[in-house]
Length: 374
Image (cartoon, rainbow, N blue to C red):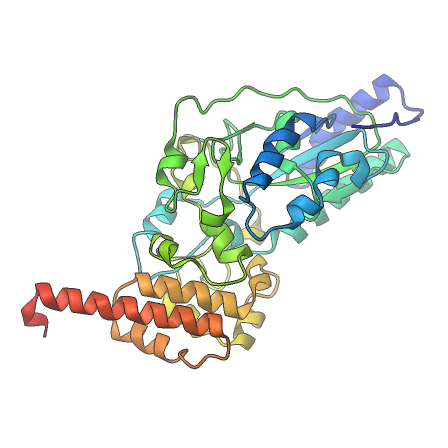
């Protein structure tokens, strides 16, 4: 990987002072941690190519198209010699309550990161301020900011910077913060002092692998996106494979199981969550039938500024139809589904039909075992 030296006039002492100041500036902006790496991603290439060769990226073909940029930050932003990684917490105040929601089949479960404002904008805005401050202090351009918005191996970069270690679920884990945090990066030509990686602390624990509803974590540090509920309910554009629908339960957008039940999230201290990530529109406590009743206009209006909005109304209905099919066979659920049987989108109609069949079968089974229910 080529990382040309950056010709700056700053002394080692000045660079060290900037690195010290980074901690203060990041804290003032609400970031929970900041660290610096000298990006060398050559070791990540072979595992990533094996993952792609196995087709585990599903329809996310942009991974392969952008592989050279992912593996060489200097190609993405010429002159990059350091990557500043930051974290911002978003985790639930009560993880146990979030986990309990998975056992409430008439309620919708939305991944905790998506309950509030779109994190892409929130983090980029804060990180841009950090970049401006760094530039003013150094007298040099600070660089370019990213937050899940470009071909960046953000977990590996954060791992190299010592913000945590990669868990067996492939997310970054930190002894103090667990994994309930967002990552963002500032690519810079300033040769700041770098931070050291930390040791791994998953040990023999396989909780994340064991609790994955669809068995998507096919091996430690390896997720098959084609089985992952987050992929199926967000990135996947078509029909959800029928054999995986029951395992989705009431998860209508994303999945947090590997985090909810991770010991590092259960026992670690909770960081203060930024106000913009507080739940909106009761998405943390809504009934499935209520959300299924949203029109396309209501979906667009109520989810303005939310990361959920980008999946569109049809996928929203597809996901909720599956959850309704997995839920109790109430008259309210059946009526809600029947209202969508003539939806103009064939994908929605398919999943509504499947859900109604599941509820009909559930009623037949219940009646068979309880004749008095007739």
